Length: 142
Image: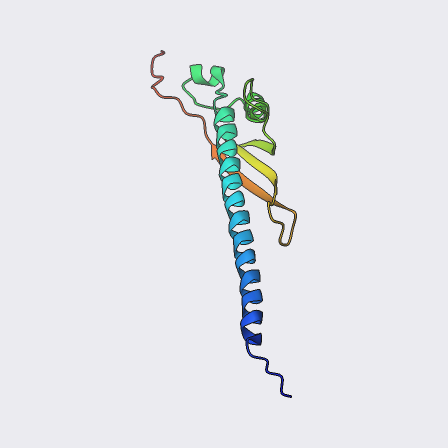
């Protein structure tokens, strides 16, 4: 009596294809979550940097100079982590530095992966820089 093993390759091919399909779905889902959260971190960094750059030193402005008030710039930049209600607090870390008349805001966020392949969570980071701006001239006063 002779046993044939026809169809064995087809079964193995189907199982391997199923694993490849599941891995591709997991990779696409994780990538989409990372893209969304990188975009959110970038928007939060931009908001924080712009908020800090709005702290123009009034005494310097009266002397026709556009300079930052470094202490106030840092306070305003870091205040974007806890916006007023009804907005929820930002679930990320914000680091603000004032250097050379510019505000540098860095947002770091831990993102939980929906389908953990290698790591359960990934870290996304975004950095934005803003300088003070004043839309007008200061020759001779306001």
